[in-house]
Image: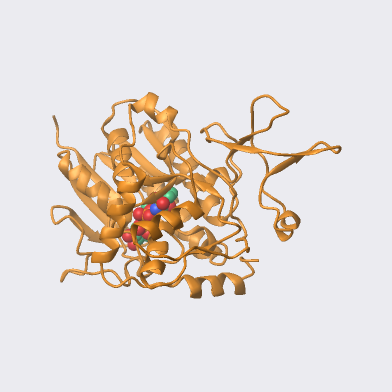
Length: 383
Ligand SMILES: NC(=O)c1ccc[n+]([C@@H]2O[C@H](COP(=O)([O-])OP(=O)(O)OC[C@H]3O[C@@H](n4cnc5c(N)ncnc54)[C@H](O)[C@@H]3O)[C@@H](O)[C@H]2O)c1
């Protein structure tokens, strides 16, 4: 077999570093291109060479920003497999940093694709990280209609009345909608700048990948959790943030009533999904959900973590909402199971235990929940 060489943009980050380990294990040569964003890496433990201590020493490292002239092009030498993970990650923050997010997510993807279309290279296959956020609200069904529904986002008026659940009204009566697992065919209704950026990244990569004849897969990741998640970044990783709060003796801060349903997928399963689609020889240009296939409420995550940490601390229900937040969304993973025979393996409680062990042994968790809440409130993004 000829040498397979993967370039992982954002490879020093949470998901990227796990993927780097996996690809090296599978015999890939791996290059990481990462600019080490301060928000992600500012409080992390760095080795003497300035890279995160956890980054696999066998990976070649290029410190650079995709947006800077020539950086991406010069990273592509000998690359056969491209994984584009680099991004600014945070739903709430994207709504107050619109230019930065759009530049670093949409524009950086344009740079990647422009280089692929203009320059000589050896890329045979590509995967891009998309997100469940592209769906906006997840999929629902109602007792009175057949089939699934893709309801629009809740209105400001509804949210101001603290009526959190989705309903459907025919003028005479109003019925509650039941959330069901979301399939890839659900119409996309992104509800934040981050989500719009992710949809753009996904569509840009699929479209240009197809035009260039490079098989391309966009993985719509649900809520990934696991070791190496940036503890100091208040905008991502709710489980790691809750653990930091609990370790500091503070209650996890929960928006709305905490009964929102999500799908938490272990980072090892996410890395496995990327490795699987990269190693396949299927010529596809499609998006696939990557989740655990299980739904959990935000309250139950807070309670599970408190139990595992032996802390008698209940979540603090804020009864406030974040502009752009959705109510329920969890994954139907049958498409990726069928196409690539991919199955998530990690049990939820085991995964959370492992996350706790990592947070406890990592450096003292920095908790910026309160300051990020203040920032979002000032920007009128929390009401
Ligand atoms: N973590 C999740 O739950 C989740 C869910 C859905 C989608 N995703 C997507 O997965 C990808 C990886 O997420 P993550 O959680 O590992 O994030 P992360 O912040 O830990 O990693 C992103 C990495 O990209 C680097 N980076 C950012 N902009 C760059 C640029 N312009 N040039 C070079 N490097 C740059 C950062 O320094 C960082 O190391 C992102 O595209 C994200 O949108 C993540």
